[in-house]
Image (cartoon, rainbow, N blue to C red; front, side, top):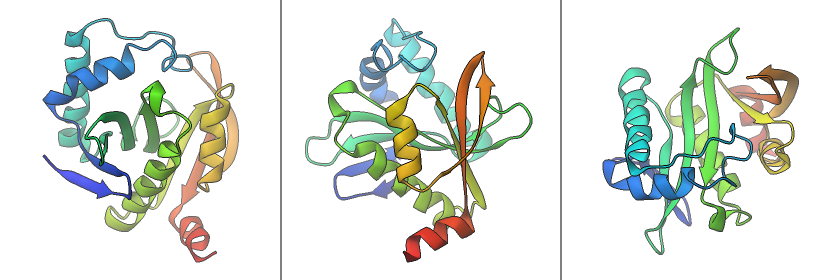
Length: 180
């Protein structure tokens, strides 16, 4: 098991086959999928395929979403991190910051904590020059988090017919934020 990041409360590591139950709990919840096309998964087999898909990104792109584990309880919280995105913005590819957590962990600052740790990792350890993110315009919490951690709103665009806000942060902007 490869651990990428540890924060005060979290272990952020590669997704593993044994995370299938956690992925199922996460992605079968219709509330979690409210702004993700409203297509929650229905079987453990689908959960295993999600993990396989992400693990293939580790091989193909050198990066993919990571499991977020509660240090105190060892509970699967959800996923966070960066991935190489080729589908959301048809006009360009980019490194995407994202996060998705089980509902019982919402509102506890975990998205902010894990997203900041992911940005730090992307800029410091991986040497990325910029990181982007997209959020459904109606997803108030996610938009608020992206702004809070320093990403800059660039524009609104459509993805699968739904308006999304596009955010970006360059390494130099991130370095400026860290000095404040």
